Image 1 (cartoon, rainbow, N blue to C red):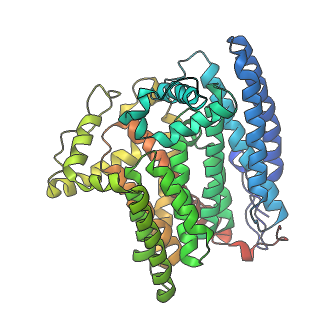
Image 2 (image 1 turned 90 degrees about the vertical axis):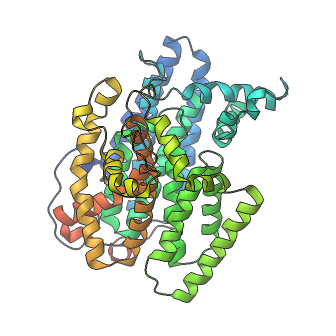
Length: 474
């Protein structure tokens, strides 16, 4: 047995270290205990030391409810063995508690807790006003009619619901967002296991649990973690739908698209393109069934477009002039002072084609080492080193996809490319590119894990659930 994956083949024993402890049941359970004590202790000390005693009980209640939800959610899904489910339940708890610890440290720590996103101010305060309106304390506030709130009304209502049901504590949405980060671990695990195999799924899940930007953006009061979760969930359920029709898959896809519509509307069009890539561009082994299933999905999306305006605003972003205008705004020096390539005339298709490799490089790899100036860029250095280390493994996996022409892997590669390209075009600011990149990392990590397993542990590469030993869990 190697790195916690049951196999009948002899493979090298993995080296010791955190990343390997996360692949073994004993390691995740010991980490869970330590992080649980740390999370509870930090909430108690932080709330009392800063005079925010009103956060104490809501924070602890939210922590317990989230852990209970994770237990129910994981145990309600099928796993190939009891051991696998026990390991994964421990890992997802580690992912959640790690994020909670960071969230509490950022929130109660000496630094400004808005340092990682000034738009948190609105997400903290506006829902309090909306909650007061829901409870009948005030009349309909003017802010509800503003474009700022309407363009992301889904997340504002999500935070308002937490304030309304539990307490108007700023700590609550941060802990709940940690839950979103933990659920992202579930979907990357399922996605990598489905497309590549068990060992790749385990490694992808472990990397997702500790990947710095994924931990950071799910430890603050921002909507990005839930959008990243929706991206992975849509791709996973679409691939499953392409392989086998289930009634639940289209409904889950539709629910995530509706969520995206009310939080970042242009992303609906990007995800629709990703869905189309899975159904249209990947080779079909059962053309008749795929045409029928694809037609049903198109019909559902059309009904949502007519009934809820799904994707209507996204269609406006097909205009290169509008994208160029957005890039110009993002590249201004006063937007984090980290703009790049803002003067490129992407309205000209020829110019866009010639500069596109550079735009893609900035989106995927910035901030570059020579740009590490200032606190917020310097703290990205450990992640960027790790990210650069992963890229060769991503390339190995992509090369093998084309060599082997495996249809499942092509169904993941195509939407990953489509979504990455769509994000790269309007990005013109290092800070925002770093933040938006987190929404595609969950799709790229399975390739990194596949390349790593192929290079370092070839005997484990591509072993799916049916080849792994162990009694299936109920």
